[in-house]
Length: 250
Length: 161
Length: 107
Image (cartoon, rainbow over all chains, first blue to last red; front, side, top):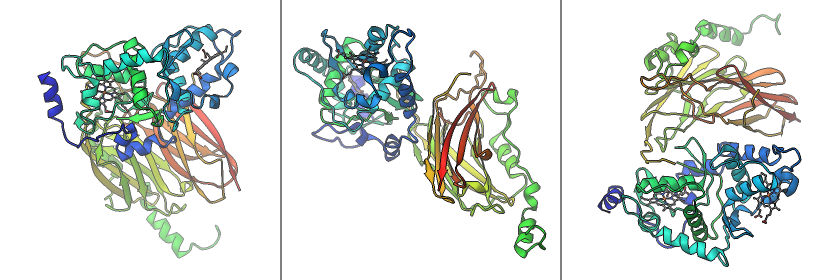
């Protein structure tokens, strides 16, 4: 705990923004804001391009449909990402990645693309980009309520050798500098995002793994129940904010 | 036009074009050189080779790079050179040099008068805080030079993701 | 030959004499060579050249090094002279060439 306090104390700089949850875009430098807004320069659009090609690509089993074969043009995915994560008919909480994997395995009879695979990131980016600018609006009633409560609990749980909770950074220290970053409200509206640090696109869960490691906590696997519950909590926290995906991050 | 006596302007152009014989040496490309992790050519050698004895003019280039770069993995570079971009007088090469990267020659853009404007952009890697140098060669053999320091905030963020 | 993911942003039409902006992005890791002691050596694998031609004539060429960021972005200009195909080629270490083309209608 002492280490955690020291870590933050050494880097406190800017003043915190009180009150409302601000869009992650507001915490970017003017250069990165301009890049996020310009598809001609934004490298994340390469994944959107690839995802749109996969949307029309034949699955391994020639007897099965393409994504477009069932869903029509990808423009029809407008608004979908703003509703995820979402509880499926069988009660499972699915984020956009898991929803895509379900169609891949159940509808196309193929093996899953795999967590953080290029194909899955590309399709997620292409679908999420269709909701760019639309307000996040996830369902938290019914079966989602318990998962939201779990997410809220994890959000305020002190973790790792530094004994810090998500909340301590992303609420109590918003606007302060930490190792060259400005701490934002820590919502997931920009994901999948192209991070300069990664030289590529990565999912929200990859970002959460980085935060877990940052406090020397055990990193949960991709698509783990904990990160899914956190993702739902973050989406509820971001309610009304615009989808920024694919974001651009330092 | 071709069989007319040369006009004053054409003669002038012809004279000015004489240093055209001076050719900057192209980027090293032998397999042995490119498969090293560090160039055998120093920054000073690279600039000397490109200048090929010419004295650069410290004007005519607008070099737009962030003074402070958030991540050395990707630094935006926008270069504009003052030029009418006519057949007789245009920018034919723009070189980006780095003082501290393992390879001093970062990129060369080859233009023709058909570009209309001498304006190019790309994104480069910077190993550390350093000067970026740009040389622009004109079809008449002149070389313009600009430089700017870029402070690179190294992303020290621990990241196992 | 394996394909590559690329994006070209340019107008589809222009007035004769107008200067147009062309911006290209290509998906490539731009892998630097590794030859340090104790590490498994691997050769450089980057896009080392990019060229653009307009109605068959070269209008732009760029030599890239390992100092260019991953997923190379290049922006340049050309004067709209005639309706024709603008062709783009990315040349990779090892000999692969990836290409794209777009038509510019000149009025």
